[in-house]
Image (cartoon, rainbow, N blue to C red; front, top):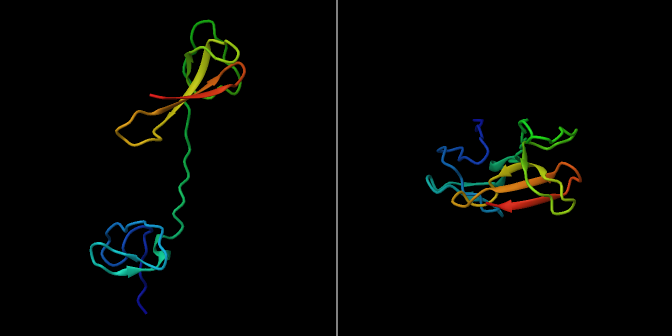
Length: 115
């Protein structure tokens, strides 16, 4: 019996990207028109690790244990501290700005900003 090499998300027959339509029953390849069972997608889970770089803090700010990324001068609306760490992610479509996540270096209050 011939074994078929399956790359998750690709047609085992022609190699085209398969449409992911939350398959119920089967998935049809748009290129070779062959039907495939949902197992052709395999276990397509993604894991992401977001590394943070360390940068110099603004003048007068102390490096705190647990700071979550680069530090900027930004007023915390909760405690009035003037330094917050930040991280950015592209959560919306590519033609829209990124989302910035700020964390107060003093009270750990978190807020977001869509830029």
